[in-house]
Length: 287
Image 1 (cartoon, helix red, strand yellow):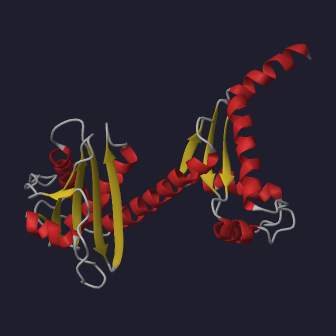
Image 2 (cartoon, rainbow, N blue to C red; image 1 turned 90 degrees about the vertical axis):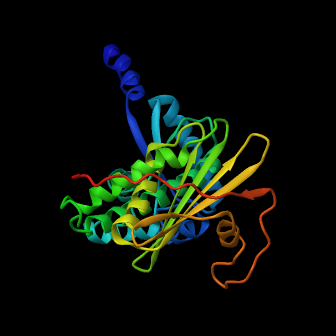
Image 3 (cartoon, one colour; image 1 turned 120 degrees about the vertical axis):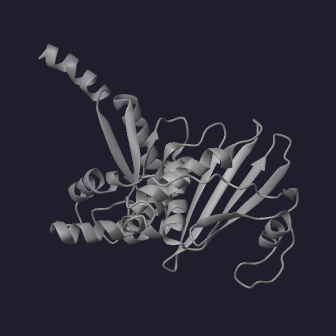
C-alpha cells in the first residue's frame, strides 16, 4: 500500500490534460439551460476554472486550455446520442472534440483572462488554415508543370516570405494577407519579432497560396515598426495569381480610403508609406 501511495503522485505529475473554457458571456448564458451546469455568473465561472487550471498545472506539470463551444457541444451530443445535461458528456466533449481545435498551454504565469484573447486568435487562425487548405485541395493540377497546384502555390508563397520579412534588424514586422475567395474573405496575420511562429507562418502562406492558385483578388500589407515608434507601410495587390507591388501613392490611397464606402479617411498618424519592392518569383514544384 505504501509503495502504491508513493507512485501515485509521480503519475499525476507526469500526466497531461485539457480543460475546456467558455470564453464569452453569451455562450455561458446558453450553457446555463442545463441544470447540471451549476455556475450562475461568467466571472465566477472563469475564476473557478482558473483555480482548477492552476491546481492541474501544479500537479500534472502540463495542462492545455481549449475553447468550449456550447452550440458545437449540443450538436456533438445529438450526433453521439449522449445526454447533454451531464458533466460526463461535457468532459468527453472536451477530451474528444474541443481538444482537436485551438488549444494553448496554461503555465500559471498569465491569468486566464489574458490567455483567452490569444486562444480566440488561435481559433480564428485554425479556421482560416482549414478554409484555405480546403480551397487549395480543390485547385486541381498546375497548368505549368502538372503537379498539384496547391503544392506549387504553397511553395511560391513560402518562397516569397524571406524577401518579405528581410531588412534591418530591430524592427517589428507585421504582415497581413487578405483574399476574397469564392466571395468569402480569408485573412491571416504574421508577427515577426524576433521570429514568426510556425502556425502563423503556415496560415499566412496558405492564404497567399489561395490567391496564387485561384487568382482570387486580395492584398498583402507589411508594417515595420522601429523601437523609436517610427512605422513604415508598404503593400502588394493580389490579382490573377500574381503579386503586384504598389507604389507609395497607391499604398497611401489604399490606407486612406474606406473599403466599404470608398470615402477618404484621414491618414494614420506616424505612418510613413513606401514603395513596395518586387517579391521573388518562385518556380513551380515540378520545374
